[in-house]
Length: 582
Image 1 (cartoon, one colour):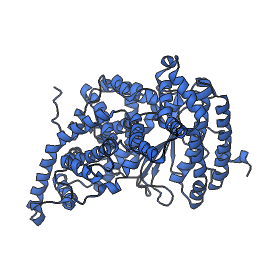
Image 2 (cartoon, one colour; image 1 turned 120 degrees about the vertical axis):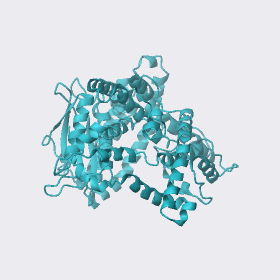
Image 3 (cartoon, helix red, strand yellow; image 1 turned 180 degrees about the vertical axis):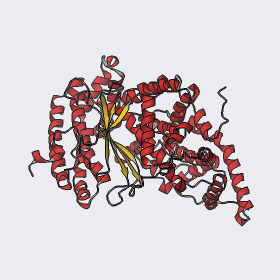
């Protein structure tokens, strides 16, 4: 096949998913990498420390790689085959090699350094400053170029990269400082401790009431069993039995109506505008209040075990960008939203658990972050450039609406009878959400604390081993002491992961942000539709519009009027007394 006929190399707006095959991957990726290498050489030869001569050509190189590789990677996740896996495995090292080559380009690094140190720095917009900072901090320009230029001994280099560098790189990509992270961990820990002790006593009392021998001294391996029994006894909730009340079509209608009410948008079916990779995939157009398209997204809802990986996720097909649009406006964002619901059978629609409902709202929140951005600098539009501990704000914010009574009741209708979910069941769902919140949060705080300790304070060969540190932290986070032979750290992969190394606390930080943001709506009154709409527009014009183009702390303060507080998070988890708004 001639390269000009390869669908991956075409000049498309929407990917031609229906004609892309495994046989296209090798020639397309290799041809693309050759072209991008040529473009990179030209950029390095002609680079100047100006936006048109540095950032714009760099963005074009990165974007082309992101889009084509993104298509291939997406098909690997939703339409897998041995042939496709083989093709990806073969060309992936070549793609990684190019990325490393780009990330270690000294001419590009020097040009960014010149911009950063120039007298014009203060005249740049916040978004452009963050583009420069993002590239300098996360693309290894400085570390790779500088360390390679120095005659650093391998052992010393290992120390730099392992203990100082990894922590610094991680925190550079975070909203919180190490001090703020540690402060939050301690606030949440102290608020959870008494609740965890009380929960343990309730668990012992319940086990004793069942006439069990182990109730006198429950051990680690007893907790999950008796927690499950106590939860069932307390709430008598069976999520599988609730599926008939949560049909996917009704849930999606409710999600779209909520988005319309909050953000003043319309979401219309657009099937047929573009091709899809499976007949069940839906395509939608997002429009503003004037009916003008502002974004598009694919929705792939159903499980296909033979070709589709499990879980749920959101991917960016193409991000909003000024320079990547032919006209005077910006390129419109396009996203994938992928889930793994049970497929419909005959006239029976896809039926969901409340957790699956939560997941759909969560992933759509990620999509909204990218689709409703107004940031035209493509390298920091949407979720790109948002600090790792803040990027879950929009998604977790949308999750919270699932547990708002009116929203839940609007989507919980029996698919056969139309009966609304009984009020008492609704209340049980809300109550069960905070079941054993204290010990569950403490467990997460153990992970967060150990992660930070190992990356900031651990001294190899010092007085404390990594297991000593874990035991010390465990005394503050576990009502039942850790076993002396506990070796959880051997499987704690997060401490080596690029996103969560020295950043496991991000889970709790993001939850604090999302609950605090949601509590603003409660403060104006969830039954005050006009006030909720106005606040929803404000959320759109701040949190969703700025994307990565502005510091997330500044964005949050712009929306909330102050820095984030953990109070709402603790209240929703039953760890802080609710405050009467009246």
